[in-house]
Image 1 (cartoon, one colour):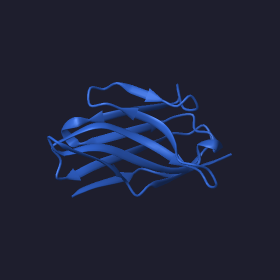
Image 2: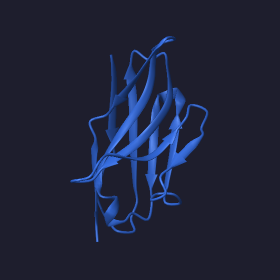
Image 3: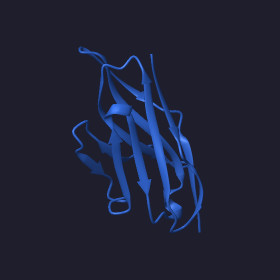
Length: 120
């Protein structure tokens, strides 16, 4: 069993910053990609940023230059530093981890989500 837990959401004014954290724990052989997704009210869940175990990153155009994803492989943890936040960044942010529980079994795990609200 694997648990993925996010933390760090909250309320911030436009132009401010927040840092999200996500830790995976449990029966983990290794973790491939980890990433952040978000879902605003009435909208579909969308990719924000992903990072491979080797450190390669990918960002949505809407957050490039403002958000930075990083990870600590030893702690099975991924971070999302969000700067220059805008009201349109308001959403529930979800962490995703591509976990190998054995050498041959890979599953995608999601966290419960953390609310980020940016006021104008």
